[in-house]
Length: 508
Image (cartoon, rainbow, N blue to C red):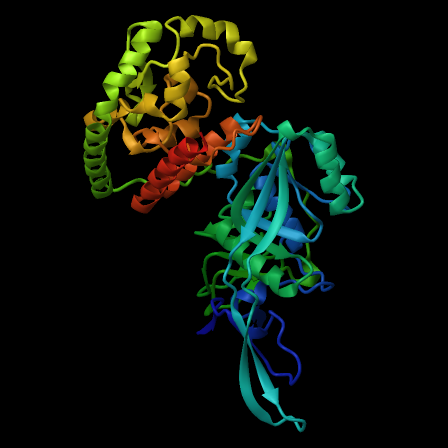
């Protein structure tokens, strides 16, 4: 039985001075089938297509299946009104990245432009060069590894057609970036970093890597390509493909128009069999109105903490809170006396917040505001300096003189060690928030309520208080903590919190 495999990452060059291209076809059952995962490359100028689409058009169809139209300079096309998002990208690049984690930011913060810095950390394969002497006599093999330095590519996601048209009409990417920054106010822009894969469409090997990765990532090409007919798990054929009895395809495999797979031939994916040149079908336009979602977007990439990890964290919280109470309880009489002398009782204030799984609890603090603070807040809402659901004023008139001092050094939060001790809070975690604030972003809410809120956290030690960015940072750092939470991260945050308090004291 003839077998074509597609899993090798190496290529061999037999020329004295040059290395092989990613394509190394061999005859299998009378068909020219490539034998390597990099064999899916389309050589520039050869006109190879799959289902009538070249690799660039396959890239556009892939993003269209996610409701995203790819927009480049120098490629005039109609900016469709049915696309949910527009991916603004330079003319040379192809990209693959997870869209779901970015959708929450787009849906809830709603920037007009989301600048995404894509970091490509892919490990690439190698190729081997045959070294010969002047007479062509074989000397040795030399293994050459591809460059593994991370690549950086900037793209923009936007729901606005006018912004997409502005980008498309620019003469070059640099002009496009300048236009986007000039015509869109800073408060309507947001920049995030994400892991992804970046490919150079002018590089043969990068095109090969791209097609290889696309086969793995795109499970349903039939969403936007009507000629792609599913016959088995991850196996898609053109309607004109002929498979003889005894042939076998192990996906992911995509087979183009006019191909014939003879008996006793096995094609093992990831593999692409291009259209036969004489049977190339018409290029298929994207039917935006017919696109249907095949599966819901993946949940944000936070980790479920194993029971043992939760138990260790809880034991740490109990021990730390007991130590914290023992060290801080000596301050209680002095703080309570100062509060009583200025504004009388009560000494403590308990605000309703949500903890693990949305259960409400009273988050206890020393009272730092006037007794009528909640009533005054309604009158001050128009002066709110925060960009999200929380209320913040740099010089809040509701604060008492004692309140300003104890807040400055975080002394108002000392009673929260009791919240930690009874299990409502943790030493480190997301900022505790009331039910009303947690409704602003469901994915953020579900992530932060999967753990106990903390006395301190990543947002508290990293926030910048930049105008118009505080709520965005809050979401970013809460999700980052839930995703990366662990023993050493908690220790680092605790150390940074203590350091910040001592720095404040040293400046006085």
